[in-house]
Amino acid sequence: MLMSIKFYNTLSRCKEEFSPIEEGKVGMYTCGPTVYDYAHIGNFRAYVFEDLLRRYLKYRGYQVYQVMNLTDVDDKTIAGAKREGIPLGEFTQRYIDAFFEDLDTLNIERAEVYPRATEHIGDMVNLVKRLIESGYAYEAKGSYYFRVSQFKDYGKLSHMKLRGLRVGARVSSDEYEKDEASDFALWKAWDPEDGDVFWDTDLGKGRPGWHIECSSMSMKYLGKHFDIHTGGVDNIFPHHENEIAQSEGATGVRFVNYWLHCEHLIVEGRKMSKSLGNYYTLRDILAKGYDPRAIRHLLLSTHYRQKLNFTFDGLEASQEAVERLRDFVANLKRLTGEGEMDVVERLTSRAREEFRQALDDDLNISEGWGALFRLVREVNKLISQGKMGGREGEIVLKVVRDFDRVLGVLREEEEEEIGKEELELIRKRDKARKEGNWELADRIREELLQRGITLEDRPEGTTYKVRRK
Ligand SMILES: [Zn+2]
Image (cartoon, rainbow, N blue to C red; front, side, top):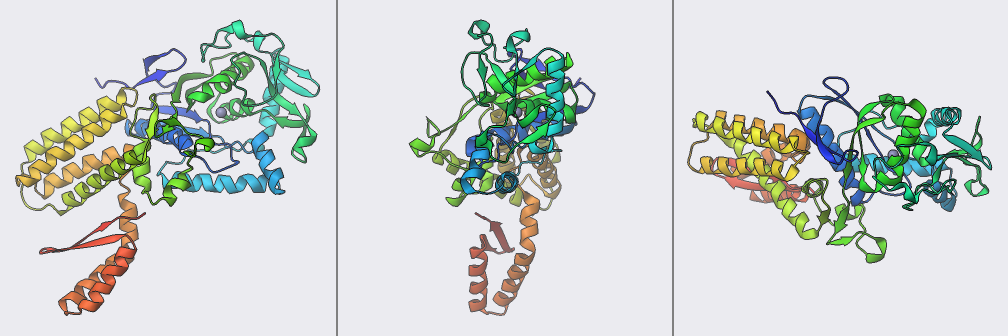
């Protein structure tokens, strides 16, 4: 029997066998970005982890339905729009566009839905009304708060001691960091600071709190009870604790089965912060000339429940790892003749088994990379011994491509697509060389180099490597 996947569930604090509510299907909610700035590499560590989770579930045959919210109204977005003197929607659209560009850069698969907070105000108002009816919410000076003392399970996710609970203490700020459990805002009455950002609703004139946004949009698209909810560890308290209180308070049923949280990213061993000068957006790293594939590899290199130390040495090592893999694939495609099929079949089935066992175990990615690079080393040995033929090459290529459905660092189609016009140039150069037109041949070689393509003239013909920055 095929073993099942195990995930570490923050709620139970142990690894549990994954069993979806509906067979073969997974509903998954991911806390998305607050669109007031470009996302930094710490944010992308979490999004790459969620992409790994999504891709691996698909690899294991599940149909995944993922929802990621876009927080396009909160204190920070309102302040940003005000600072620039432009409408909120215009301000946030810039960062929404940038966010999707960045996802593509890192080869992060798109979720099925990206609901925006501002387009779901009515759903949030309805949820608050239900909480009022069930006695969990109350009004104070036009704002509505969740009465934490009323929800007996409060603290079950973060495992906080409820001694910190002060009955009636209220916080209006979305991102409070107090260890104390306090009544938190569901709906904030209009404040002159908010300018023209408000909605006139049954709750009065105001705007939603951040936490209610995620409860409301997750349940709208995934139902009141769904499989997986993810985020960074800093979301556990208060954000996710509050989501549970709001959702379960309103519906009376269990909200989420598996809570998966990704650890922080640190830079060169230290907490990333603007004041230390080690704060990087994805765009900052790209501007230094690094390959997005290497960045993705580095972000994926450490188990998601461990702190990831982002270093520029590590990025160089990731660059080498990715290039080794691409050279390997190029070599496999060049193989011809007869090889030793039984040896290759043994190697590949072992590699598949190791890869699956590693990732089944709470996405143990370092073991996953280990399985892949062990295969690379062993096959390279076979190549040097003349034991790899064309058919054997195809079998290994199939395995590497399958693993890459999860890892996402090869991006072969992209290379081939980019290559069309350039292939024409390579052919033109070949012709020039045959005709002894060295000047033209050199000029084309130079042009291709400018485009990130290195040519290598071999006795059997010219080969190329794409190294785009
Ligand atoms: Zn959220």
